[in-house]
Image (cartoon, rainbow, N blue to C red):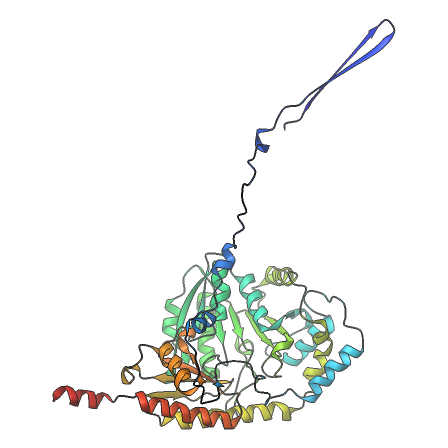
Length: 452
């Protein structure tokens, strides 16, 4: 290692101590660096690779509503927007009590208060998939739960399997981390079940995770128990862990049974992601969680420790909501959930019934969540090249905004959010019918014209 040389010469001349100190300082070539002549601050590669497909598509659309008609936005997946779906008073009271207690003003452990984690584990534990507090990681919303799950399971260069159509955040997060996204198909003719053969064909030695979203955003579909067993069989054969996005797990219409994935698994390890946002109608409170299901200790200590380390990046979710969490989970009356679900089902039935009779449109009746997907027979609408142009013009002419399903990697469909007040849903369907009647061109008529 380079060091400055220090030479000391001591001589005794005429009883005088003469100390001659000569310091020889050389220059370290490694430290010869040129100074920057100008500012050159650049965005990181991660930031440049981060893209929200919905935002990119919507920002590129020319959205100028008809000034003669009030805007009806059927595009936003936030149940609180119109004020017709408030959370329950018991939920608000739990928050007030947490604030008034003055117990939750400081930092909590990054994975959440132990009492709050136990409240979640007790709420979701069942004999087939038992949970303890240590199996719960509290997160800043379900979105962060998904981010942590992908981060702990995948490395740059790996790939994950995500549904098409599917929630765009999966791709946004994965691509920013250098993870490849492979889309497996859902089948609208089978109520959006997974094309299992296509799914399995995508798996290779770099596949690190299978994402299963049930109930589905954007489809509003709910898988049967039999179908979920088949999904687990694919994962088991190929030794692929599952990230189960079950944020809409308790928003299932009467007559349809939702079964969490973990209790059906005998060997496949599962990270189940959920939260308060949808079922309790408080998306802005940012309270989510990961449930670690690992019957056979396949994750071992590594995945658990990894989740703890990753959670330390932001020191956990809001402490006040954590303080209220036990009461929210245990004291919210069943009537609240039933009222929400009844409303969503009614609006879905209205939308499906109205649009099913519109020539050129093919809605798929949902069985849960807050959405309905509508197919567009683009060959009957020659005025538009794709679903983006179709929905863009729908805004211009009728002031109704539906999200083009290109945002979900599924062109020639659009998604409707069914949380709007009933009268707005009816009015929106009337306007969509008028719009389609104006632009629809029957193929038989086209063929007849050509023959003449």
